Image (cartoon, rainbow, N blue to C red; front, side, top):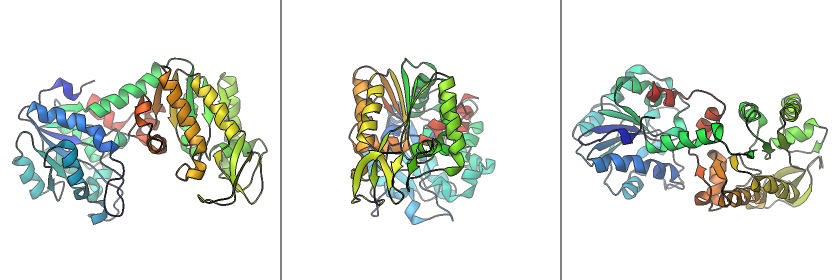
Length: 396
């Protein structure tokens, strides 16, 4: 793997695709800077070599061109603090100002370009747009695993303009290395924990994992589709009625492959979708018609934990309930505690980005697991066996 360690960046301008799509509050304060922290080692390596850095990223999903809400100018101050450098900002990612500021960048300096997605050409993978970006730097580095599954101009198309000068950043290398460890070098028992809202979102991943894991734990909203498929009463709980046959087929497939498929048996049953709901713990296949399950119950949490703590390799993607509400965070916390416990006993634990990463962060456990991925969607596609355009572009 060709990483930034393969080059001395002295006097070179490194054009780095980072993923600074960070959450901002109403006052534009960053509420979670994990993605910025993740890219920092790559940036500092290049600066320490005596190179300069031009950063390009997207932020949010702007619909109609430049929008103040999605401007990357809001992160300049925090980024400067993290890097210990006064970060310069270009009010466009292409055009005269970007070209001029990039041209006059001195070794040790950092320039952040405005949001790439202010141009429709970015997501369309436009070659001419990619070429304009490419002219800003001498070397291309992709350190944005969170967008590696997108064939966008800055993640996949741009690499062709740097045939002999394209590299993975440290974050990308770590993401791929850890994913590979789980996919192809897993110590057994290997347990995958799947949560979240819909079984349809994780279908391809579940199918892929059935050939690799010893245990597959299913929680979250998607579990109710399995419960309903076997005739359970789930009240107003989340369900995909068009996926009942699929759920039944997955259960049979797991049995045929010798995979221990573990479903919840109880739920935190609530009268409304709110933190102040009236709640009781009861069987998840006997939920009254006017109520809904919003978390796994204590019995399920204990059963899941027992399996997790006996595991040597753990992949976790998706929460067990609506963990954003403290009332329904108990199940997700029970799983997190078990993952930490297994990790302390020597297991390798990979947290699959997105809500799982947010949950681990909420519980203050980010440093107590083996690795927290920064790219939920990209990691899922990699685990499904798909080729990631952002990865292929560097490897080709």
